[in-house]
Amino acid sequence: VGWFTDSMREGRPVAVETRHLIQETVPTPPEGSAPTAQAVVSQYACQRRTTTENNNKIFTDAFEVLAESYEFNEIEGPCLAFRRAASVLKSLSWAVQCLEATRNVPCLGEHTKAVMEEILRYGRSFEVEKILSDERYRTLKLFTSVFGVGPKTADKWYRGGLRSFSDVLGDRGIRLNRMQQSGFLHYGDISRAVSKAEARALRNIIDEAVHAITPDAVLALTGGFRRGKEFGHDVDFIVTTPELGKEKNLLPSIIKRLTKQRILLYCDYQASTFDMSKLPSYRFEAMDHFAKCFLIMRLEGSQVEGGLHLAEGDSRGWRAVRVDLVAPPMDRYAFALLGWSGSRQFERDLRRFARLERNMLLDNHALYDKTKKEFLAATTERDIFAHLGLEYIEPWQRNA
Ligand code: DCT
Ligand code: MG
Image (cartoon, rainbow, N blue to C red; front, side):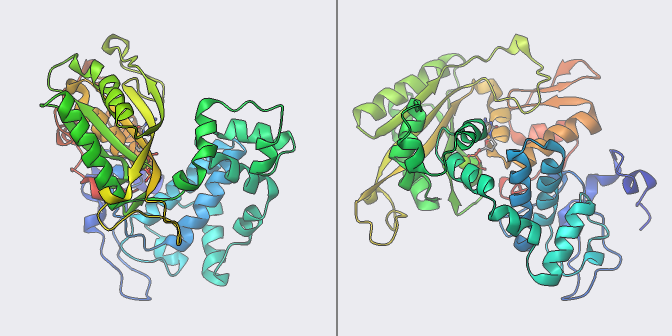
């Protein structure tokens, strides 16, 4: 293939060449055969189109276990490598059936390929199975599944000899914070996936509340549900108002209203610390500074089309759901929407692409051109993709 340059082979940044090489142009190889003259796939998730249809789940599930295990051990390099490998395989319109077929697929290193080889040959990876039966991995996985418990706390509990929830709850030396208390209290519900119908019902509730407060408010569903996922671990929304500054009162007013309706089971409100004069931020992957709240809401079955997504035999008529609300000022809306729509890997690669290929800094607040030394304005996500010289990727194609 003519445009397969040396810089691509060596994995050096390629600015112009990869622009048109997104997923759409990658042909599907014939069933069961290795593709021959197959197009090169971009190393950046933001130059690939990744739907929720994953043709390589057997590999990506394994990579995610490995990545998480490295994360628990704070080994960043291999963790990121497996996340990138999983992401690139998710974008393929075909199932990998032999390693030779991945010749033009980037981000697959030696270790990754060895795992794939094992899975292709035996149907499973022994390294992954070893991790899945490892006591520390299992315990950290269990503890971090509680809302409010991160890897640090989980590891501290593990080192303290705790192995189960009853160990934690029975330990007199542990003082759970408010978030963790709610996490344990509603564990059954919030560890259970939220359905699309439940997300829609919550959208209606928030929509009613927001518009009762500010008739011209803007509400957008973001996160996994905006990307077309059928299920999620929470429901994410962005709320704002066209009038700059007015968004400051929005979340407190919504919280007040939901509290009055007695449907707020937990609320952690964080006021805005956003300050345009402190941008651009060089801190990578830092949490954004917009006002936000992490909620647990009570959702009635009668409000959900087709009923609640509950366990067999559960006839309570309501469930608890995790909801995140973010309230950026309107002039930051496009950046916040792009950032909160995810996926995490898509966001990471957008930022990495901006930095390495365009000498720009992108985060949830702004896009800064380091060459021109200026901020680039955007009112839509399309504006941001255009500034970056990227083809627009629809939200449902961002499941990297
Ligand atoms: N995000 C962000 N800053 C944070 C947290 C999240 O920019 N501090 C972005 C990344 C993805 C998106 O917001 C939504 O986050 P999640 O709800 O964790 O992910 P999701 O893609 O919605 O997945 P899930 O379906 O599990 O909720
Ligand atoms: Mg989410």
